[in-house]
Length: 394
Image (cartoon, rainbow, N blue to C red):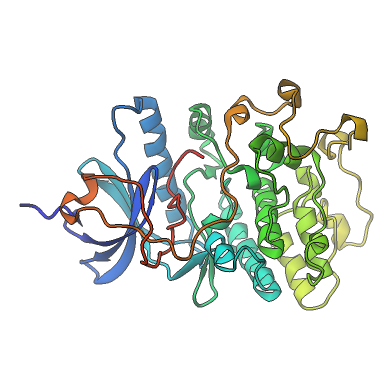
């Protein structure tokens, strides 16, 4: 009888370390090279899913392999191999020793992370994003569960399943129109919410949401209703971080609030610009703020205001404002995309440091039972955040 836990006569599956609605992540041994790796497997779709849905998920999985493999940076998860085995797509990656930011927050009982650690994470992610964007790739789903902090302090970006390649707009369009949500409400940029074209500055906004949460313990719009969260991103100015946590340095408060500007042109120009501001702040120098037009800022000139079309939405009179914790009654007039009407609020950073997975029957292998995970005392490995970082609906 064939060993169903051996993929392509090379990768031997050892332990199930993560499972989501669309797939599994295994710790495995690469028997050709004698090293441990992580293997992501896309769950075979049953007859209840139509062929278009299945094609989208498979394309999204292939996209993650192509995009991640094209990025060579210490701050991005390394992809070793990709293929298909007995009808199951698999992705072989480096096995990471650490936890994602969602797990770190929950392990800290939803209290914010230490200030020095937050600033270091910000600088490292900015560096990795800079490399990503220079390759013409926009991640589009930055959130705490997709950023790992290893035991040696290295920070890595994971899960490029819905990333956009600059030259691959056709596929992006097909993935979007298939009706599968792109991004997570608590970390989506205003332009994503509005269904507009996004560029690298959308990732900067999402990073701002992540940094706000790990620095204060709450996302910038801490609401349970998905619609209220989306409207908050579009219309509401976030509270300064130091209103939640006075010990945060002033430069960091300013940097994150600039990342959360409603108009892309009012955010830092790019991830390199962001990293420079963080480095200046850490060394005690005064960073330049409002780098919408960095050439003027760096030469000491005055920054011109952004074009009217790119300015933040004006604050509405008090009498016209909606309560932030309620869905707006006139939803059709809010100019949010149709898919948002049925969107759930998704997950804030609530991953568990103690979540484990019951292994399925070892004889079942990859194509055996796919069941809902239940808790055990087994420590999780990278990627076991509930979603496993696999292509999935939210």
